[in-house]
Length: 208
Image (tube, rainbow, N blue to C red):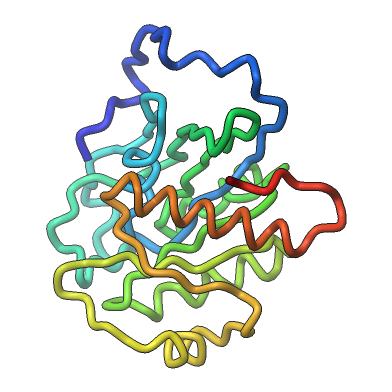
């Protein structure tokens, strides 16, 4: 994806310092199947250099990883992606992207600890790959919204059809996005925070 590797951490930059006015930090997990754009979204929206743990795909994944629709993919996240975005002077989100390959899903338990909510990225070319992901979130009881990532050749479906196909209740927001776009990815996070604000009885900072 072209983002710095965790193997060679860059020196801290002055612009990466957290604003002194920030008084609330929220952990958000970006989750989805293999190759749906999680690393891309974290890298696009993060205001700091994103931490990535991408490794070159090897023969170990042959027969294990489903590359249908993402045959051109040459690297994969093996631990997590990490980024940060300030939604206001007082509210900052810490973003954790999960590995998409099922053989790395054992890492999810740690990544979800302390998370307030999640974004589920969906590729409509490979909708079935999302079923297990959604099941994992429902088992954990983590509130989430669904973001349909736009790929050049992905089929467009009405939201009502997607909701039925994914067996989602009406209360779960479904939004469209382009994970490559900072503005679009930020809008997704704003949608998630607004959704979380409607769910909780514990005060959650409402995004601007």
